[in-house]
Amino acid sequence: MGRRSLKETRQKEILMSFYQVAKKEGIENASIAKVANRLDVNPSLIMHYFKSRDEMLIAFVSFILEKYMAIYKTNGEINSKEKLLDLIDGLFSRKWNRLFNDSVFYSCYALIYRNKNFKKQFKTLHDSLRKSLVQSFVESNQHGVTAISDIDKTVEIVFNIIEGAYYYLGMVDDKDEYETKTEWYKNHVLGMLHLE
Amino acid sequence: MGRRSLKETRQKEILMSFYQVAKKEGIENASIAKVANRLDVNPSLIMHYFKSRDEMLIAFVSFILEKYMAIYKTNGEINSKEKLLDLIDGLFSRKWNRLFNDSVFYSCYALIYRNKNFKKQFKTLHDSLRKSLVQSFVESNQHGVTAISDIDKTVEIVFNIIEGAYYYLGMVDDKDEYETKTEWYKNHVLGMLHLE
DNA sequence: ATATATTTTGAATGAACATTCAAATTTTAA
DNA sequence: TTAAAATTTGAATGTTCATTCAAAATATAT
Image (cartoon, rainbow over all chains, first blue to last red):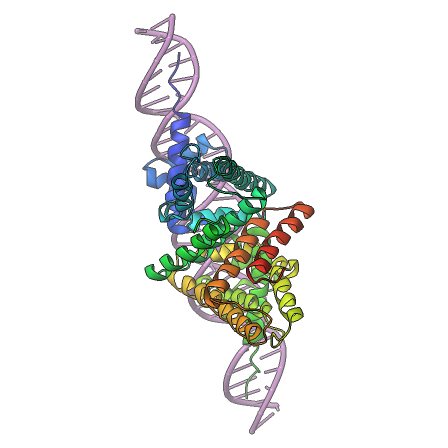
């Protein structure tokens, strides 16, 4: 007996609201009052679902990383050149960094330098993204699409280029420059894989 | 007549204190009171030298970018393979990102997504760093050290790799992993320049 | 209908915040 | 030694902050 729990739903709603506020005003300026206000709800309700703002921030970082991870979904076995090119295109596509390569994500990233746990979480995420690409390259090698000799090293460089790209392109407003340089980065990767 | 102005000195002291506080507690948590406390000075003194916290933050970002720029000083004409290798070593060396590739720098970077002026400042800085490397490659080409065909594109990729490296290596605590991957990144660049 | 568990509110706390202002102190040149 | 200009302090402002607590409202199972 008793009332049905809304805990998980409510917590996700709250984190989403936190995200929206953080996007506009910065992560540290996303106060409980503002997050509550956005949901048209009493501030103390938020304290009911998260013991403290700190705990909320911890949950938020996990929430962000979860979403980030979800973008990198493989579209099945890499058994043809087309599939591989699609994969690479996806890595450099504009849509997914529109979602996450913004203020909020880098603000979270900045936290790793002051918080060991955040650092570990970020590292784990990035390493698992790398592992996923390793797997794809193993497949494309097996199907004769590529002949990559040192897959680990190659994947490391590829992600290095992707991450550097998002860092720099975050500063680029000019659409032409954005596209030109994205092409440069992507072509360099294709060159590495002998796919030009 | 009247007293000699300490404005510039004091402002720099204040910004340095801001930096120290921001390093420990995050940029947004670096309050005027804390910055003043660290200098053993009255908080209103800070308001005397900066009209508002906002203006202080603006000055701070310029201050950070200035320091960042200063690290990239070229050691004269690139007229030998040794000079070029030194230059590349420097770009990947651990010392300079120890100073700036930390919480504070990325927090500042995160601001570009909410502030057009910061974005422009960051862009300008990064582009001028790129220009400086273009110049170095022009020299190394002229002296027959390298035979780079598309210097602009090459520099773009090189910086892309450096920036990606700092992003990822920020998460790496393990010394061996740090060094191994740094070597990978650097060797890839040397390969691009046919300098292995 | 009643007991119960959960959601939600509302009021109150004290601390920290940016900012203001006037007054005090210190240095400098004439 | 005096006037001027700058530094520095100290007290006060009202706002926002995270957090607490008790009370109210709501839904669910028996």
